[in-house]
Image (cartoon, rainbow, N blue to C red; front, side, top):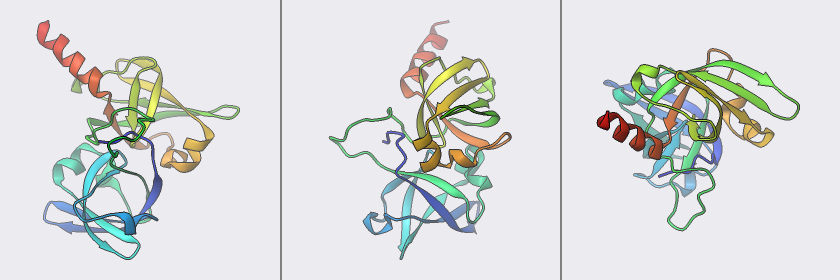
Length: 196
């Protein structure tokens, strides 16, 4: 379980094929605090630490994860949003995030305002996910509030702190991002769908 509050941007240091899987090496400042078997969110994808070596650790992404998320497009040197699992008793500063990417989206616009940025994203509505204005959405692991919403897209506003401390500063038109829709909203949508 995560909150969508990014701790750090890690850096991809290695990508090794292992059958259909990919072993991803990540460099970050808190490697010494990690343990093998610990869960870490990578651009919103919950992956298990399988090895540690100095200031890097490795996780395994299976084919399903590579197909459903933007992790299959990672290259060495890419920045990755990282968050360790929430501890019981911690404040929930973002919203409840499972680390299970529902689908990807494509950035359709980036508007620079006076002190903030507004990003617009488009996603495939046929998957059945929805957003609502002022509802929660997770983009590349970042807990955000939806500004505008329609059936196939939404926008979010980014403050300078988020811009500087996440990989949002590298997102441009055409960038593919991971989405996790609000878990409560997903259950409500499923219940309504089954009743109709």
